[in-house]
Image (tube, rainbow, N blue to C red):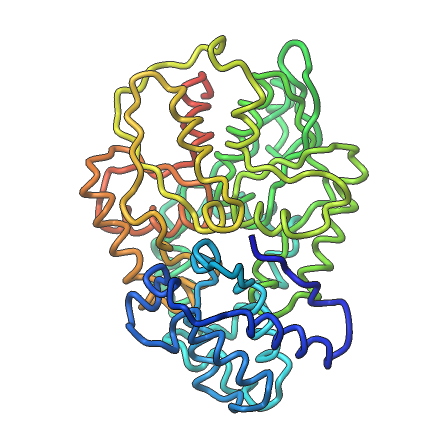
Length: 438
């Protein structure tokens, strides 16, 4: 596994030295090429991992200019890190890509060109991140409004309004799943507007207490999965703590070349969970899980929900309703290439009687969501999604499960648009339903 240097540690000279040292570790063997989604699509050396590493090395050593073409090739990278999984020299490609984007951000010359070379204008994204993603309280207030818009059908009208950046708004609204409210801790609180409770007690004898990471956008778009995680954890004997001070994991900032902001958010999360006293932080979104796994969480261990559940219960003693359906499993890049935990959703779903669990073809390839990639590079993201939809249709599955909210929204949005009746959900949500969650 690649070792990641600390990008906030020292001077600009040391920063460039680390970039040069890490990029020098690439021996240009080419084993990464068939695993790179953009190389497979574009057949361009500059849009391959070794090509981008050569470009980064060239900029770091001042041999090539930091110009529009450099920005373009970095923008096209999904940072899926499939290349890391097959690299014989364990080059930390994700680190190189993140740091290259940091160079682009702080450089005066390409500042006017940055994000202009993609097929989509993404200047509103930083404002959206600051206004919503890093402000959990605002997101929670937004839930009710989105629910009303969906229930009244007004969201369809909203998509037709001529916003100053209509394409961005439409792209986001198109992917919004039905709004789900937080699970209530007790029936007595049903008259109160549903909000996340700080503590959900175990059912029966308590085995322990874990923390649950809510994330940012997932609070709104993936509340059903968070509810399912609480339900299953409570049922198998774990109390669940949700510290109020937690916020975005910072991954979107990390991959946008702003590690300082990502580190600030992680400090806030570390303080929130340290105050709760939990030793394990459960994540339901593998993108957040990957960010937490590569950050300082104050001694607590971040664990993907499927991985944790496999060893947390005696599943032979738990009643799970049969489900005679074919379930296709999509492996998110962060779960497969960063956390290396892709096996656990399959093992978890095997506990559902009569279910036929199959792996989606080309599971080593990114679906195109990749954080904000589906907004910044919609043409490439859609081409990658075409392959996933084709593989899904050929699988004969009635259900698709995936362990990352971004992948789920990206795939489900296309399925809804084409009138498909294939449901996309998290493996823990499917398990919770079969265990009796209403």
